[in-house]
Length: 353
Image (cartoon, rainbow, N blue to C red; front, top):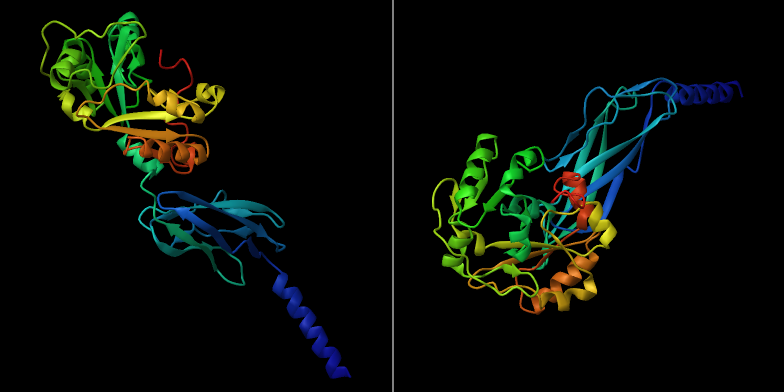
């Protein structure tokens, strides 16, 4: 009987000692994201809790099993009973058609084990032809700027261009995105060349003037992608085109012309949208297509966006079936864009004026 009592006491003491000190508990230890399209950025959320009776200290930042995953700790110390959220990000780019298992390793002073392994798993499907990722849009985005007066711009301009009169451009230096391509144009190309030089001197390495301005555009590709105001008779520009400076040929822009179609409600669009985007309701797409200008020999790449991606992908499929083979939707919608890039390029209404 005495031996049994001693054994029970020893078991009890082992249990007490086993719980003494810091102890890390993670929920869940395996995060299954199900199925996602290639290019989406998965956010796996783990709850870290110190269930011990002494401070839990993470001895270093977590490591991961591949460069496609990141998992920075929000804090390096947890008091007894304290919890924190660890957000691990897995970039599915390059994993289309594969079941993946990626690992996050936590290092702490938990006496039960200095390293704990967390798992991120799921299936990455191949993207459909009508789908495109936020990173694809990000690295292909360009801004088209019309430097003429508001009156000239209102009469007619290139599709998706925003209007910044040449005299007002210096006030836009801190608002324009320096890391993206910017194409500038005016009537002849002379002011655009000056503007490109000014922006180049201020660190805008990818800025270019459209060679010859609208005159050069008309000579090279005609009225392709040109939008006229209602009631205005289309009239070719006149004068002498200027060719020189930091310039890009009109044909180069026309053969990969980009337009972003935002399908959200007007109030959501006004709160923040891509500069140059047009706001169209999903059910208005067929009527809107009828208003699009001639593309000539160029190619129109249409990006359809909304908040979550559902309506955008419906629109992209419809456009592809009705003569626009380069239409794509932003998979994951603007939710995915914000995860990767925050509010970058999402300008509130009025910031383009």
